[in-house]
Length: 223
Ligand SMILES: [Zn+2]
Image 1 (tube, rainbow, N blue to C red):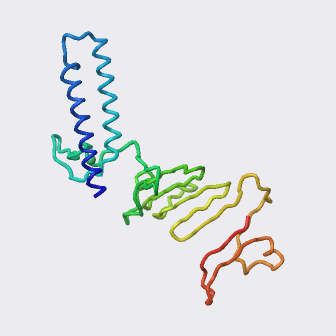
Image 2: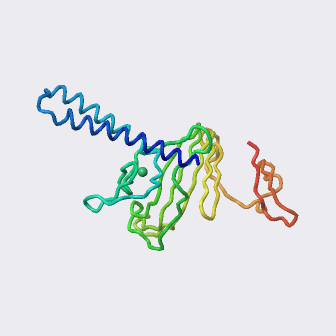
Image 3: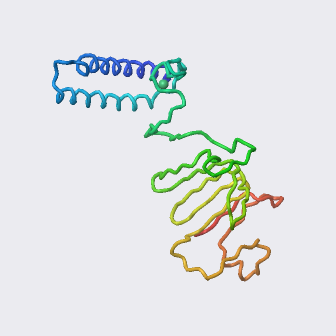
């Protein structure tokens, strides 16, 4: 019910806007009796209505599908947006869950000649002070020390908060703590916990979460 009324309300607003644009165009932009300065003012009004059109169009979910126009293009029957054309803004609700885009994963078995051609999505949002990045790409060829290597297809999600960076890959989750500003030695190491001595293990305030069969459920780090 809510969706229907949203659609009807948007249709009405867009139709009113289109009538206004037609009115300005017909009466003022093609009027020989007006001087160029006046035409410029009406031209600016027309441009501003165009911006209103763009922003109203962001509310449209293209419910009624597309219709064909010239040059084999298809436009939305309600808002007039050209199918598959880029949008430059997102419209987000202030209340409730914000949603931008959909979950993308690698979509080809091919190895592409460059990262640019293999890229599916690379985007970052700063959300109330936390930074979230999404990097999804197919496999591609890369040069490393004058050798060509294949970089595997991957979906990587990165979250940055309080100098802590968490990267979630397909087969690996990495966590870097307070990288900047922390005094570290010249060398860095990585080991499984059972490879460390008991007295050294005490430097790691990590709690392993597991079930009765010692299956890992997660871990907690005290910072
Ligand atoms: Zn539409």
